[in-house]
Length: 196
Ligand SMILES: [Zn+2]
Image (cartoon, rainbow, N blue to C red; front, side, top):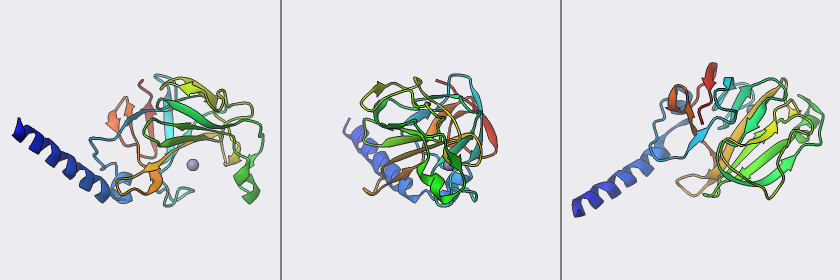
């Protein structure tokens, strides 16, 4: 039993060190194999097929960012990727584009998870925030409708999670997902199907 615990803690330590060593380069190549982080659902309904247009550190608008852009038609139902409590919701904007002033035009939903991390779902259509601050949501629940508000050139959903990394810094975190291709870190230019 003692040996078991020793092995277990050794693996845990190894795992934390390994997590810190993962570079954005590894993530972009889908090489980041992590075995302890939370497994998210794609933020869409079960079996919904979506195209990932931008992933981590994309040259378009995600340079240095750990965020994902799913190309989806306006008013596609957006689902919670993880259980949590709604800490932010906006749905009154009808403006979107690539002008600097569009940065403050985005409709969004923010959901805080039980480990303190927060997921942001951006660019929702006008009146597309279907939950309110304080609501408890469960993974897979429809929370909003996608759109093209805010700093956005075409209808899509921007998804990112902010939280504490292994070093205590509060920043964007890479997230892995259940998909029809297994449990993976997503890569741009590919289709994925949501599996709840
Ligand atoms: Zn984005």
